[in-house]
Picture 1 (cartoon, rainbow, N blue to C red):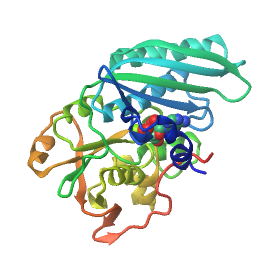
Picture 2 (picture 1 turned 135 degrees about the vertical axis):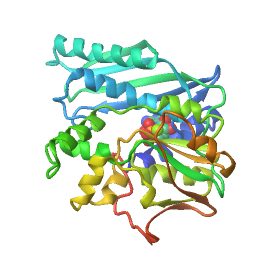
Picture 3 (picture 1 turned 90 degrees about the horizontal axis):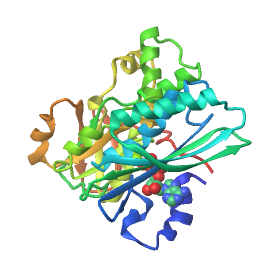
Picture 4 (picture 1 turned 180 degrees about the vertical axis):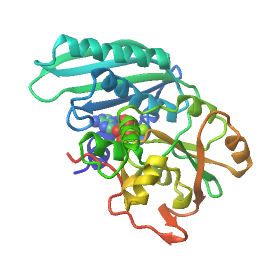
Length: 313
Ligand code: ADP
Ligand code: MG
C-alpha cells in the first residue's frame, strides 16, 4: 500500500469531515486564529544518509515544514520538535543539531514551543510540527481553465543530489556535484514568494514529491487538467549538464525534495507575477478543462514510468 492510499482509507475518515483538516489532501491544516499547521518527519537512512553534519540535518528538518507553510502563504510562528534518537547519538551531535535549529530559527523567524524526546532502538526519527499565520490561505483547489502554471526555482536538483549523497552520481563535474548535493541537503523554503503570491495565485502547492505527482494534486483538487511544456521547465546548469550527458528528464520530474512552489495564475495577473522582484519564477504550462497532468516535449507527449515519490507501507 502506498502512503496516499493509507491516508485516504484509514486516516481521512478520522477527520470527521471537519473543514480544518481539508480532507488530509492539503499541505497544512487551517485552525481557528489564522493558524496554519503542518508536520513532517525525517528518518535516518530514508530522508538523509546519516553522515551529514547534524546542523544541516536540523536545518533541513525545519525547512521541509516551512515549505508547506510557504505553500499556504503563511508566516512562520513557532514549531514543536519530536526526536527519537539512538542511544549512541552523543551530546556533541545534539549540540550541533541544536545549533542548526537556532540558525534556521533566526533565518525564518520562529521559535521552539515544545516537543518530545525519546530513545529508539532503530534509526533516528525526527518530526517538526510548524505553526504559521495566515487568515486567508490559498489551497490546491482554485485552479481554473485558462490559468497559467508557474514554478519557482529549478526542478530535479535534489534527486540528483540524493544520488550524489549516496555516492552514485557519476560523470558530473566537482562543482556540479557540490551544487546538487547542497540542493538535496538544504532546501530553501520559498516563504517570501508564498506571501507575495497570496493575492495573485488561484491554487498553490509545494513540490516535495516530484513535479509530475504534485501537479497531479492540484489537477485533482481543482478538477482540471494541467498541461506542462517540458521546454519551459527550469533546470539548473548542473541538471542541464547532467541531461546533456544522456540523463533522463523523467527522473528529474518524478524525483522528490525540490521544495519549490507550483502555482496557477489567471491571465489578468500573469504580468504582476512575472514582475515580482527577487524571485526566480518560470511559466511551465496551462490549466485546461479535463483531468490529470500531461507533459509534452516539443509537442510530443511524455510518458512517466514513475510519477513521483511515494513511501510504501
Ligand atoms: P506534504 O508532502 O505536503 O508534507 P504529505 O504528502 O506528507 O504532505 O501528506 C499529504 C496529506 O496527508 C497532508 O494533508 C498530511 O497532513 C496528511 N497526512 C499524512 N500522513 C498522515 C497521518 N498519518 N495522519 C493524518 N494525516 C496525514
Ligand atoms: Mg507540501
